[in-house]
Length: 128
Image (cartoon, rainbow, N blue to C red):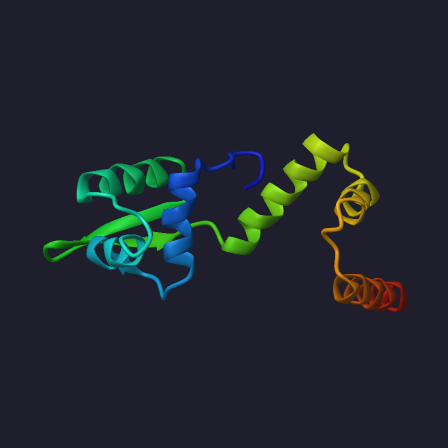
């Protein structure tokens, strides 16, 4: 899927997060209720975004009575992996240490973060 996947614009990502965060399938009205809590979109904006997500292969839909129902075709984890790999490649030349150093140098890592990272690394080392 990674070879066909593309980065989602922020608005489309918001729609996908609303669907991922709730129990699919979701109707247009269900999605509208969720996104309207944070966004001031009208229904035509949402329908455009949903249509784009179908075209990109992130959603499928079917007509059920008078409603249109949407099903995610890409898992949140799958998309996060894609975005993370692209981020690491583009900004850190695929260097995990560059990413960690940037976070550390900017004081974005707390002591708890460092302890969790150390524990995680030790687990990975022991399971290798």
